[in-house]
Image (cartoon, rainbow, N blue to C red; front, side, top):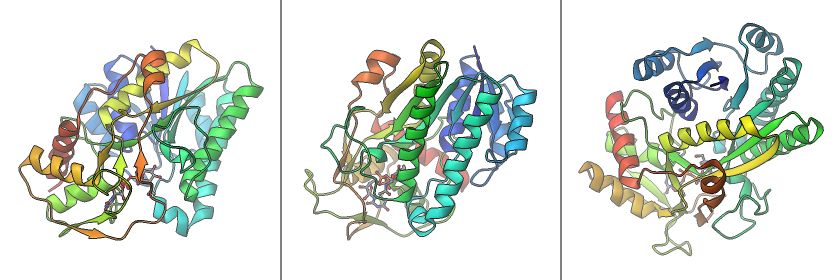
Length: 334
Ligand code: UD1
């Protein structure tokens, strides 16, 4: 069992990962500046697991504050979730994205080296594959076709981590390329709570279902896909969180860099997702067909064999579980 630091640990994926780690007996320390989450998430994690993670309200780019945390806690491994993640905002404010996402990662790596912490798992994204190769994306498919600064920060941090591991033979780096995380914990205590207008499909659907928005815009129905709408690999956030536990076990026994896709390997179109949500929850989702969104791909889904073979991890939940749990969480916010 390890003492694990989760940067951004009160966020959507971080909070679910904290729960899964605590349930497996690991110790969890959270560092988060609460820029896109709130302190009550720590109480909710405790409510679900019966264990309270240590919580530090700090900015990971604040070298002094981060060093003080490492001074106090004997951190054995880090899972690095902290970062800005809104695609549209990254196009409007690229410098803010590069500064924040790169600075936090560099300060974290330097601080880990200073305190002799040699294991890091990084929240990367399938967005690094861009439009360079056909699906399914494999871990050794070409990367770098990103369509926005957010994606490029993921690409650059992957590169920084790979170089750091090349230079330090004790370092163990695991890059996790997430596909499309959706759903919520079955307790409905934690889930996805975007501020403002949601960018992503599932939070938009749940807000339409809740009456917060009157309809969903389907961004394009003329793609080269079976029904013309975009196909994605949606993965339940609890499955994704469990992928981190598997990655942590792997990082304990290996050095160097290893990359894993975390997806289901199954593609679902926007129209299929709308219909699945309606069926799972007995609701109707009004929608209109709108123009394509710039930067969107027709297809994105994972080759999942490597994670299955090497991490012994596989996503278990289906689209119905994702739709049901996402709606249960959204209803709890009403
Ligand atoms: C997006 C980001 C990706 C990021 C990921 C995080 C873009 C171009 N990509 O992925 O970099 O890592 O979120 O989860 O923004 N859709 C609609 N109507 C909506 C919203 C979405 O039709 O209101 C469609 C999209 O066109 C797409 C699918 O739903 O076909 C999924 O979209 P979304 O949830 O935003 O995820 P990605 O675009 O795959």
